[in-house]
Image 1 (spheres, rainbow, N blue to C red):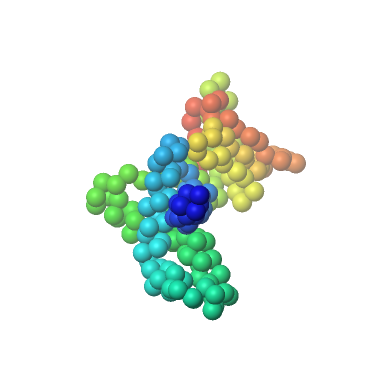
Image 2 (image 1 turned 90 degrees about the horizontal axis):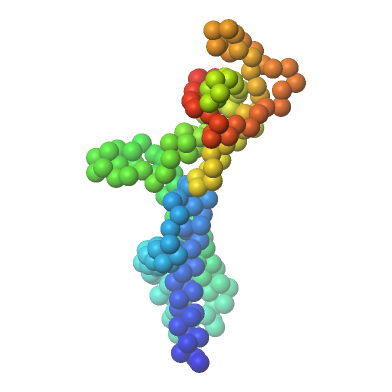
Length: 199
């Protein structure tokens, strides 16, 4: 029984940092659905990197007598190792992926962008813009995509909430805001073309 308990403990300890990283990373960047086996392997790989980076801290925490002599520092050390550092790694990875340097690396080495769809790529930029949606029945809906608007994320079905509807001229140009408009929700299954214009 002790051997099994120790094995479970080691497995959990090696999964936690990677799990924290992948979950936070997944909240920031929509990821393609993966099999559970690959998720576990990804978590183990990230955990190994975490432990390698913090190897001096882990070595200190595992020294005989350290935990009993320094309980507070032991708790702090394990918290940093299991949670704080993976969170910092995830936030840094997200910032790097969205940086111009990462774009250059992807072009130079033909690396696939981690964001799976153009939909998510555009709306992740957080741009405020005018939207013209041509429906499949020929109608054109215009509105403002602003700070109170919302776009769904992969892998959910694409839909878009425009916080304000706009009026259109006969030529199809935006002429104003619809009075008392609270916006509209567009389902992309009913839209044939989505156009964006500078606010």
